[in-house]
Each structure stands twice: as C-alpha cells, then as structure tokens.
Length: 338
Figure 1: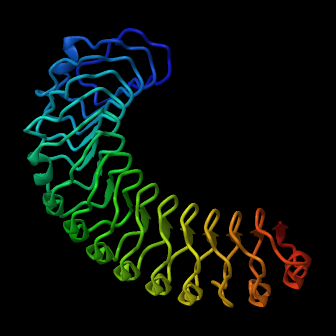
Figure 2: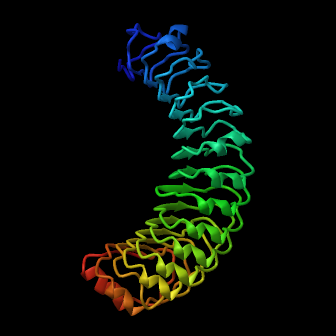
Figure 3: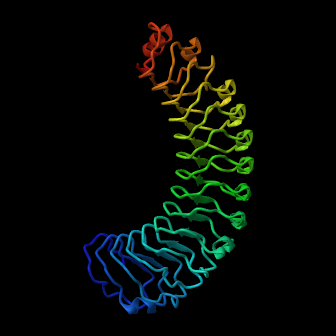
C-alpha cells in the first residue's frame, strides 16, 4: 500500500496481510488500533503527518522499519523487539526509554529536545547509524565507544563541551558530525578514525588541532569553519585523499607548507581569516580557492602552476598592483574575482 502525499486524512483500508504501508506526507492525525494487528507488516512509513500518538505496535513481530520523522509525537512509540530501523527526527519526544529495541541498526532521534539519553542506548551494539542532532545534550559518555558497529554518527547542534577519547574507538566510515557545540579541543584519539570519509567540526570554539588528525587517512571532506583556529598542523599534509577543506571564519595567519602534499584537494575555502601570505606551493589539483576577506598584499608566483584552477576569489583583500600571476590564470580560463 503506497499513497505518499495523497492528501489523506484517514488511515485507509488495507488487507490483513499487507507488508508495506507508505503514507508519508499526508494529513493523518491518528491511526486506528487495527494497525497494531497487521501481523505481516514489515515497513511502515508515516513521515510528515500530524500524528500525536500511536497505537501499540509491540505485537508486530515482522516489523523491521518504522518511519515517523516530522510528526508531533510526544512519547516514544511501542516497538517490537525485532525492529531494525526507527526514524523519529523532528518530533516532541523529550526522552528515550530505558529499554530500546535490541535489534536496532538505525536510529534517528534528532530535533526532539532531548537533554540526555539512557545508558541502554550505548549497549545497542548492532547500531550502524545514530542521529541525535539538534537536541540539548550536554554530555557524551565514554560508553559511546561500545557501539562497535557504528558507521555514521550525528551529534551536531547540541550543547556538548567535551569529545570523549573513546569516540576514536568507533569503526566510523561515512560521517561524523560534531558541529555547533561548545568544544574547545579535539582529542588526539580522533586520529584513530582512519576509515572516516567526512568530519564536521564547524561552529565550535577550537583554537588548535592535534597532530593526530593527520592520521585520518581516508578523510575526503573536512569542515572546520567558524572556529578560533590560528594555525593548522603540518600533519595535514598526510591527508592525501582529502578533496575539500573548509576553514572559513577562523584566525589563521599562515598555512603549513605541507598542505601542498594534499594531492587530491580540489576545494580550499579560507574566507575570513587573517592570512598575510600564501605558501609558494599549494595543492596541485585545486579547482576552487576562496581567499576572500583576508589580509593579502601579494601572491606567490606558484599560483600560476595550478593548472586545474577554475575559480580564484580574492575579494576584500588589498593586493598591491596587478600581479602577473592573475593575468596568467585568467588567460587560462580561470575566473578571477578581486
């Protein structure tokens, strides 16, 4: 039964042996009790409705996926123990229960106003992805290191002040979001995440980074904008798979020469820093270099060697004269803004 975005206000008649019900983005305000008796139901999609409560679903032994994002639920739903996927993002569930479905592999409970989570959460060793973003969490316990199969973790937009070193024990591969918290330092243990592709530490209070971040060998994208960084570790030169590095809105006065060793780097965003000069050599495959609102007066001749550069943004600097390197780049087809 699939009828997403169909303007439904009442749960429709469905056969007793229905396996999938997709009624996302309708106008359902309630579900009938008979939904709790659909014994063959494997997947229930109800995202984007106006539900404030649910019937008892704990008897749905075949149910594996329950999608409830963007409703008005105030209580955690009753779930069968075999449930593997639960999406509750953007509801009003203020707390998670002490007992959670033990088979969970994917849990999204972001944007609910959570101030804490139960210890039981850190014992769900089958979890592959966990989203607790946009809550009001103030503490992340070391027990998070017990999620030994976790691949994706989103803790952005909370009130966390410290990153436990046990985070480095996780087998994360896809992403780690730690943005918009109140972190002042990053533990060296994070460098052990050598299979992680995406790390976001934006909008914190970081003044320095540990050399160990250079050990994150699989990193493809690193976002650090709007912190208080004054320098980058030389170890960044070991991030040889890095494609994007975002550093807007820090306090950088110089770049490490080792950055030129980031042979795969394509996008380098340095807007709004305090740079007075650039290294003679930069990553050779750069396509986009954003240097807006720095303190540059001159440019290194080595910029002309960036043969892949498509856009160079120099606005809100005060360059002396008309550097020859800009004519070379423009003649090659690079868009130069100054």
